[in-house]
Amino acid sequence: MTKSQRHKAIVRRRIFVSICAVILAAVILLIAFAVKAIVSGGEKDNTPSDVSSAQSEVLSEVSSEESSVPSYPETGPNGLDANYSKLLLVNGKNPLPGDYDYEGNLTTIPDEYINGSLKQVDKDVWPYMKAMIDAAWADGVKLYVWSPYRSYATQEMLFKNKVNRCIQNGTPEDKAEAEAATVVARPGTSEHHTGLAADFNMANDKFESTEMFKWMQEHAEDYGFIMRYSGEKQEITGVIHESWHYRFVGINSAKEINRLDMCLEEYVEYLSRH
Image (cartoon, rainbow, N blue to C red; front, top):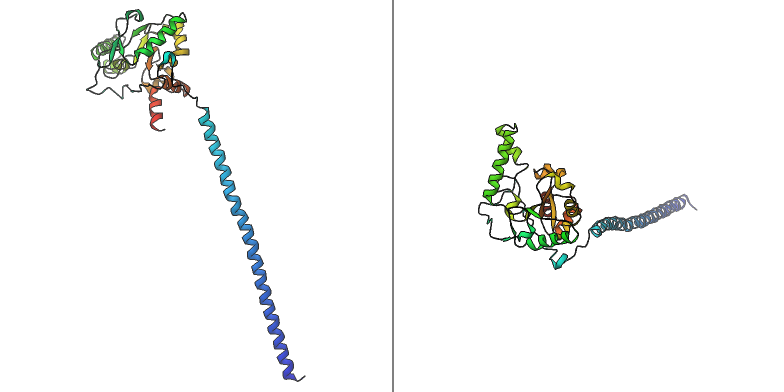
């Protein structure tokens, strides 16, 4: 073999080796891509599974919370509508409108249920109140209505009298109205104007030591009533603890308010967010 022929053979071998190297490199790259694709595919497959699992846990928690809410009845005692409610919020920050009809929906409470001088209540609330009092009597508890509906004029008189007593007891005149308002609502801001609330038996702290109070704590919600003013909620309601003052909100609403440990102000806000 001549020198020229040997040179050409060497060149051909080098070309062959180079081609083989390129092919081998390409095969390696293809294998690498394939492996990466398989691994990536596995990761992608796992991601939805992980997310689904997390969502399931959250949904399970939500479902658990919802299932903890009692299923309230459609009908209350004596066939009363358990879903009927009256959630009108009246307080120092939410006075009744100037054109509010103070007497348009009232009925007179029979004398045998009264131990005070005021005798009117919202006519739609009376069946619930009557059923509650009748049930208390059946249990041997002498529950009576002390102070239900009050006119604007009556509330104005009571408020002025309380302001004067505060002044007589040493409260500065410029602070007397604010102090009085924690005990007696300003005219136009009292729940008594609505006919939806009533004081029972008496209007003093002695009520809390009676069988009537104990019975009301156990049964009032079954007839749609809540103890409206708790000392624990005074910062929200602006009213001192009143164990004798009960407000009609509706049977199922009363049960839910008590379950959530809310006052009416909190419950109205709660409903606006749900």
